[in-house]
Image (cartoon, rainbow, N blue to C red; front, side, top):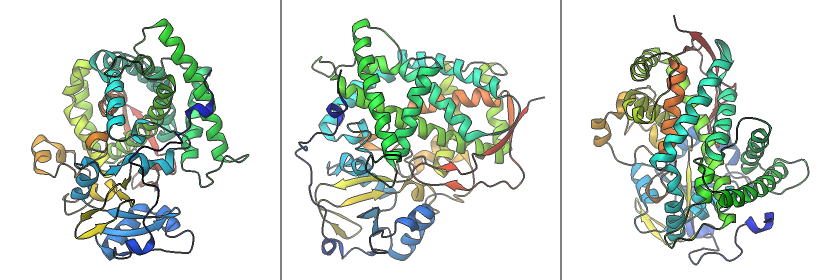
Length: 463
């Protein structure tokens, strides 16, 4: 059996790796501030990330220098910045070196932590899991699991966020790994929860009783579990779940992906999928509850497609749920599940008149751009009509980037649309979702948005 050590980041860095960050003097020509000694602006950022970014843009402009979390980053703000960094025509921005300091200890060699040729080869191999036949299989398991859970919820008051989080974890165990709800799925789910919490823990060493220790223990459990299961599934063959597809995926030369790489891809995929879907489904439900006219429009659309209350939304009918997709896109605009995206410049470049040296950590900010009044009329208003085909064509292609962009565009974005459409089909055709008048929950903005009170809603049966 492979050991945990076999799955740690490689000691030999890729040839494009940059060892050193620029010195403070190298970045002194870029406007910004260092903040407090040692901690910089870390606590200001954590207190209210959107307000912090807004204040920095107003004071310094759309290119600014910021010191937080132990290092200096240059923020590049705007749709043109999103295109420069995410589309990356010249291949000078490293995703691996951007995300690595945050995720490398727990999710090394995930697809998002790969660059250029290696990323392209593995992405192509893993894309087999999102082809039509596997997707049809996922639709069946999603419809069954979601329908059963909606019946369990029943009418009445509830905290939506923890309920949908548990559901998405269970659905991931079913669709991604192919294990039924139960004790084994619970152990797998808890390991993922511990890893995700550890990825943003302030203590970055695996000391006793810390989140990082729980996270590394969770990783050890999952490495052993996925290694064992990869070998079993290769020996037995078959299986339509995502894990079985990954276990048998091959590169262009026909060779299977190494077992340890399958393990790392599964670890990363589960992390990337369940928290982002939980966040985006929660924000969509909140906006539908506070905009009942749009909730009614989606309900009418989904009833017409499925034929009535609580019926399955089939694979061939997913594209017909156009208003539901537009509403989901608008929720992703207002509250993107990944508020900021880090990269590291491998070469010197210029942007908005500033020379930014090689080795500089840089970041773009979807949350700011998605709510920028220079791009969006009345950005605080929930208006799915922003996502008609005509409106989308009239905007900058990188004004809306909840799934990233370029070569690192989220591999599972169609799965995300599918899962949310099926959730809404089962939820809205059974219940009316309401919140108390004037209810406006406080949202934790970072690392992934979530309502601090769990989102207090009431499900009312439809007359």
